[in-house]
Image: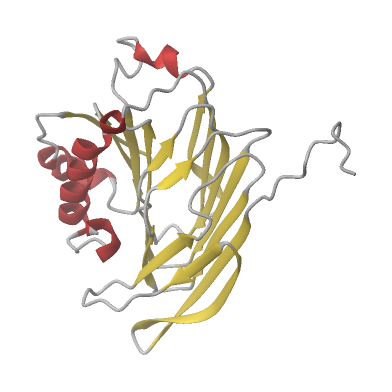
Length: 272
């Protein structure tokens, strides 16, 4: 007979993917691949000068207790654009929080773009996410995260959720960029001093020897009727913020901006 006083052990998703690359004869070559659990990695063929990598969470989303780990190591003179297959959905948590840990190591004269598709927070979701990057002073790194507080078109409303998002970037052994985001009351983001009723926002960071010199180029690209933007540049970092009423106008703005700024097409999964 079942003990009615005992709570069932809920099945949780765990997964890890690691990719390692080196440069051989002027081309970026995969040297190390590990994938386990619900996380898979793919390297689809493309016709761009930059190799694309795609991370897939086969669990279909993240809820309390789930644990995902992504990591990549880029050797000297390598290039990689890494993204996710689709938006990451953070579902209602019955207990605890989901975790996503991301670690990247970027060698000398390497170029790395981490441009995942958006993270969608559902009501009563809970997520802790940490990203750590170590890079050489000669390398170029682009980092992006987009957050959507429920999908307006689906009638979703967030009354409660929790998000902790921590970024740390070390450049030649010194802290180059740090960002800390914490959301525990989505209703508090409706004021004019915060999101002002908008539901979607993005942080885009470009860290490279030419980052500050490209500030004007970035500003000239940001001409959108339905997306608010802001640009700052300092200490070898170019930081751009996007705020939109919903996910769709934000996505359109990001596709245009990333394609122009990178001077390369986005991975095909961005257009599916």
